Image 1: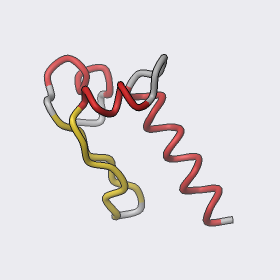
Image 2: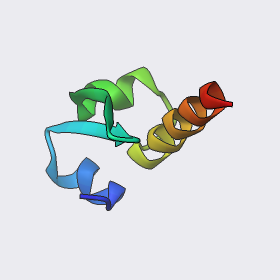
Image 3: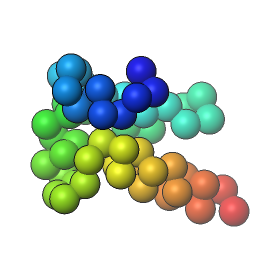
Image 4: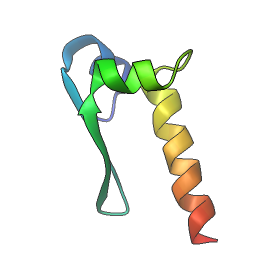
Amino acid sequence: THIMNLVEKICDRVGIILDGKLVLTDSVENVLAKNPGKDIEDVFFAIFNEVNHEKH
């Protein structure tokens, strides 16, 4: 799904694909634990910004 709040509610695992590459795969619990104070959407945008910054 592209609806991040659903990921936290119904999924056990999450995978984030950017530009056709799998950049993250882990349990939702681990992703949230590694990013305190952030939700899955915040984590997605942090990774998105990091990947785009590396390109430029």
